[in-house]
Amino acid sequence: MHPQNPYQNRYDFKRLVKHHVELQKHVVLNPSGEETINFSSSSAVYELNKALLLADFKLSDYLLPPGYLIPPIPGRLDYLLHLRDVFLEKFNISINSKLKGLDIGTGANGIYSILGAQYFNWNMVGTESDEKAVDVAISNIQNTKALQNQIEIRHQDTKSFILKNVIYPQEQFDFTICNPPFHTSHEDAIKGSLKKLKNLGVKTNIEDLQLNFEGQANELWCNGGEALFIKRLIKESVLFKNQVQLFTCLVAKSNNLTKIEKQLKKVTANYDTIPMSQGHKKSRFIMWWFD
Image (cartoon, rainbow, N blue to C red):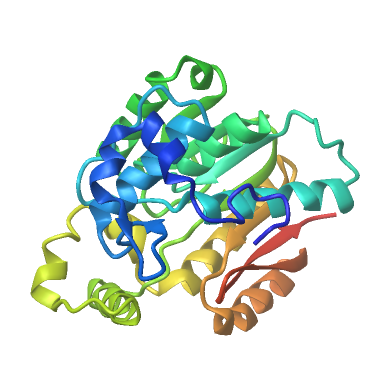
């Protein structure tokens, strides 16, 4: 985890419950007698992340409808902390600079836009193709006055586009961020979730999982998975190379990097990969820019 990530240590559940009492019903003791939650429970994870947003990011309220992706706050914040390091070290931009970012596929949770605004004081634009998700994200932003002047949510009404239509003429961005759908199909997403739950020691079946997948298609899978999505993003980025200083995107599967780098070489972009880790989990994001 990034050395400046405030969630290096165990969660202080007593403090969090003071900000969000609904979390209390999910707090249990582990075999060592320490407070924790059941991380395989979507409702428990949702209440934990809502408590973090209310306590540490000063949101007035935060609501997600059932079935939409529940973002793990520490991991999302890690991406942005590493991104800030890139601007400090590679582009020599002050730590207090008021950057403007584009969050591609912000989802109903709008989490990167919220963290960018509240933790870093950046101006953020979130884009999303799911109309219901757009409405939910806008509602959450309107609930907190401090977010209203720093975040704008835009509907991408053409699903074959990623950047077209949502970056306006003459508009300038310092960076893009993106957590792409990394599964290739609904079935692939189900299998991935089953494997994850098995690693957590939770017994379940495909029928039970399918009941919870409604509304998550845009967030979890797309044709070709993350490799094809990122290749499409790279191709479109050429059209906006004079409007965006730095393009970035998470890459969940390291074996996709070769395909992605090949596409970056085709468009003659400069690029680099930033490694990240959270416990045993290894991840990374690819970044590219044009001369």
